[in-house]
Image (tube, rainbow, N blue to C red; front, side, top):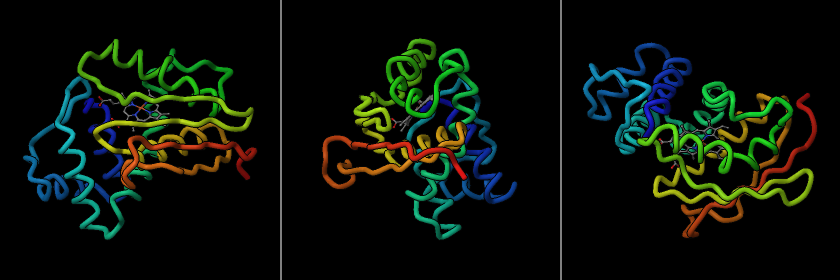
Length: 184
Ligand code: HEM
């Protein structure tokens, strides 16, 4: 997994659970506390899962809830890291519908180590985008969180449903995202 995700995970764990939570989570995950993740690095996917599992054990929050919250947390930073990929006139659904062709595809080209998931995104109505997500990492909770974070960034309310999910035996997860107007 691209170093940006691990760096963001550290930022997230420290922001939500305090400075000492990070070395504690690393120790519980069996990762040397001296390891400093760097942005250009590429790290085993298992480390992310192990750290999230450690935070889950420590806080009692479900791993899925942590991944979703983490996704919401990182969305603004992901968008800020690749500002040229996001057009100023875009809003939530425009970012989503372009997430594969304009964003992940370019991330893959620019960072040969990065393997963002292949997303299939279609605008089904002016208020709805359907995203098909398939990845051996099975991080649909993270994907849902990223969607919520993008919507928050634009001050838009969205409803997300997931009629099919890899965790329920499907080949891919389907995220149906509907905009419901501005945030209160
Ligand atoms: C908007 C700007 C976005 C940027 C700049 C971005 C960038 C990235 C990067 C750099 C990674 C790490 C890849 C790797 O570790 O190899 C990643 C992973 C990921 N992205 Fe995106 N992304 C964006 C939007 C989205 C959206 C809209 C979704 C889903 C709806 C999404 C879902 C994911 C997921 C689930 C992963 C984790 C890896 C996996 O599941 O295989 N991303 N993204």
